[in-house]
Image 1: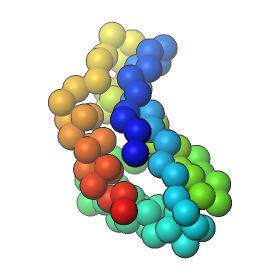
Image 2: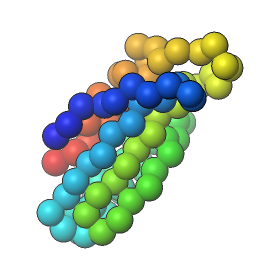
Image 3: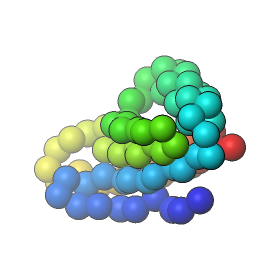
Length: 83
């Protein structure tokens, strides 16, 4: 599993998760959805049959904002949902 990539313009974290089957992809998306509901934080998600791309943007979308420890913590929690 790769690491989260820090991107600029706009500031964000991105990561691609790859799976062996559609069922594994669905299970991950279900877990991610449930976790996002609990945390009240909703990343940008795109997916296909065996992959999920996630983009995390800072909660504060001000132009000068940077990624915070809370953003990295949420990213780690998402990593924990990956089988």
